[in-house]
Length: 127
Length: 161
Image (cartoon, chains in turn blue, purple):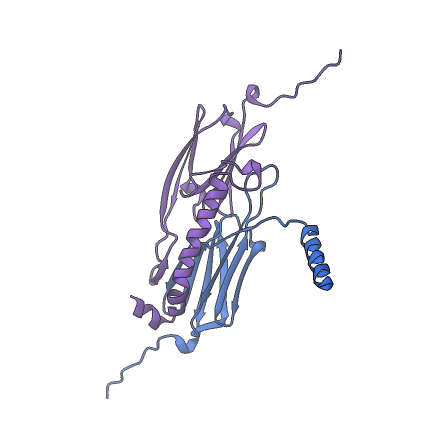
């Protein structure tokens, strides 16, 4: 019983002592998803996110896009937003064929399809 | 339509994550609306700063002492698509973007949408429109509107007699 009490008070002390972390609001950015014969294209709104605060990764069959807004200097009422979204991508995507570009606060991720997944044109031979 | 997605292999996304994502989106927006639009946030300066929280783009206009500052999140809008004007104590921002499917691509999902907007603000004080600046970076429009001299805050010295 005594032991329990001690551990409880210790626990409380720890939680009180820890500085309160600045609360980050995480939002789901709206996306467009397109596809053609060669690739799947994911387009997402990432306003105010600089390139260095952006993360695009393909983990097994999951595409994770994340970004953190840069906070303007000086007195400001704006709080930085964190953008985050996860997609399951089909196995036809080539893990080495992923590229991304960022322009005007819009992220575009190109997921190239593996050669095997691309449609093949079959020549019809006339005899 | 659903079958088509499944065949194309993006079925996992649509079946499992779609509903969850939509709900999360709505919740996020709700909380943001509360926090930014209605000033429930921890930072007292945030109160009422984000206006029309459900509107697009999200815009914050705030008083930074000698100047007014505006921040608008306009992803996908280029500078040539923005039209900003100041008249007396009224500020108007117009703009838009188009988000069409690139040629030769089929559409799986379109949440971003093409947008056109026109927002007008009655400024709380007179500003020097000649010295106003606007810059666009990473899809965020930042404006600095210097107040006219007589509107700026002044320090008053207390004399000891």
